[in-house]
Length: 159
Image (tube, rainbow, N blue to C red; front, top):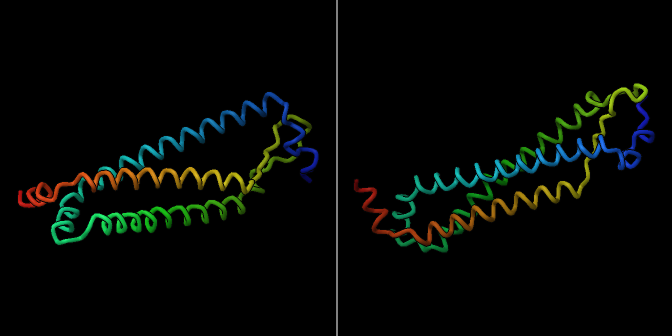
């Protein structure tokens, strides 16, 4: 049976091989977050450009900027928040189902044992980063709506 005490992560903290693997995983994770953030921002900027006419019509019908901001924030929370919640649920479920499959049995030091740990502070950090991403998109969106000229948007619809 796999001895978790023998292979506890604290026993390997000074091992350069373990540290290099952790560094490569950390770098890959950070790059994934950066690419995801850039894609997220580009998607929503293009989405707002396509909806310029809609925002102009809503403004010309008398909807205040404050209400448009509120509408867009609720839209962000519902679309992105639901996606994050569903993704977290599916990820945790798959993790719990398959973590025992990928655990490597003890083979006299020939194979590096697979440490699979989840720490609640990691979830907090990840959700903080996702919250910052959503906040940046909301700020970009509010800036875009505030610079929108009603007459230009309506003229765009006439063409």
